[in-house]
Length: 510
RNA sequence: GGUCCGUUCGUCUAGCUGGCCCAGGACGCUAGGUUUUCAUCCUAGAAAUCAGGGGUUCGAAUCCCCUACGGACUACCA
Image (cartoon, rainbow, N blue to C red; front, side, top):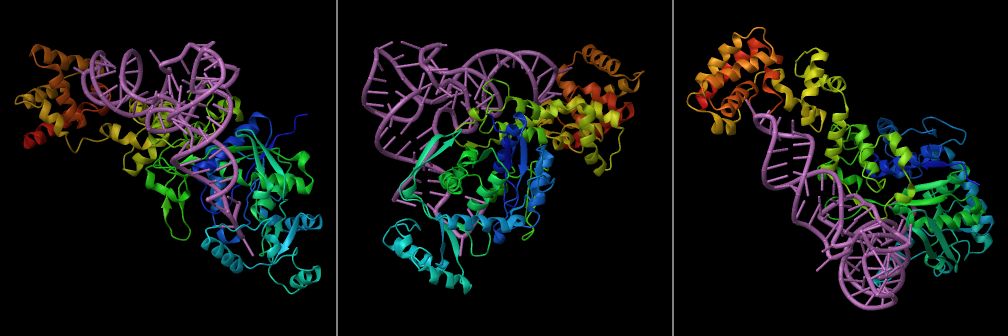
């Protein structure tokens, strides 16, 4: 019988979510939606020391921007709440105690300092210390102390943790949807802390308890969790929950584009692309890290880019909307090896999305920038301009560089073009062309074009040379859409004005 | 050090049930064409001895073993 699909994205609010985390959220979301399942946002804030104010809001806001929606979670509620682990605090102690009474866990009174000392002495002998079956009997815990002594220490408020008593001799099997069958021998694993001396559970305990209580069916998370998956399997077994244990899928890591290693939050802007979905300002240092949204990426593009970092549909289709991804996605087609982010490919994706937008939509996005420059223009007219130049840009913010000449005369003239095209008699001819334009009536694209071309032909002039120089004085460079479309857009008077201004200024340069 | 995971063009990858692969696509790059400019678009090209070695087989990128390299984890962090 198929189990009802319930997946969770469970970040800890220790800062902004980086794109690796976003991808994990995305894959969970795609899987849930495809299966008609439930997507849950659970906040894992059991580490009081690393809590960062604003991080939870950031996570919610940035995922909302990207269109990753939750059915249950801290911000939307749900029947399995609360969804913030700090709000579930009493629960975990209860379950830790259950494990103790079943003999699967024990109290450990070793101080962090004493453990650190032992670690150092091991290191001195080039050995690695591990709190496990081989060492637990020589340490201070409820297995080595008498029952009375242990109870007394607890009664005296002596700090203690609760550790899992990893069995000595078992093969633990993790069946992973991406990695296959991973077997680890329990004797190699350590007695992980389940419950900290500050009264909070560790990730391992809280995670298993919550996944069980929230009836999570599939755990889709980063590969960094693979090494602790055997512990998690053991915990399910210890609790007697093995028959409802979720299925696992450990995602390949997102790597640094330079060198190797896991992409980290700290990589920041060093790499020439954002590592965060939206801009983040560190509440302590005030330092700002750029985001995809602020860098001009469309949410749809970011989703598309991220979906393809570690997954592909097996066809040649590359452009996928969220709905298409939901249909096409499959865990089986997730690759095993880590992927590096490619800025160029990301730009290309965004460019494709720019083109998918209509001129009207682009005009709406471009308008604020123009307003900021003190330019007011009719939205319908701007839409036409956007349609004219949209194939030349990858980002909305590049629109200005490709269309400024529709709004103002050029301030500078491309010297390369002057050098290559500007001749002795060019100024003369351009002035003639100004007169021709002046006398063109009605002033439309086609007649203006025809009249100028006729002039060039009648005087046996070099078409390319004159046309490029005309473009130079109108636009300022050898860029842009059809010249007479531009001339028509700016109007007769402005065109004539720009020709005269250009001729004058270039005269000074040559 | 230990445990686990991984390794196909610069990058993302196809290939996973062996022959259609002297390895295909995409980005990027180069050249040509179109555009009287730029961008787009079109065409072509360079680019992986499939990490290396050894098996199995008539035949291996695909199966097995070893080695190398990379990575993750190894906290009272997640």
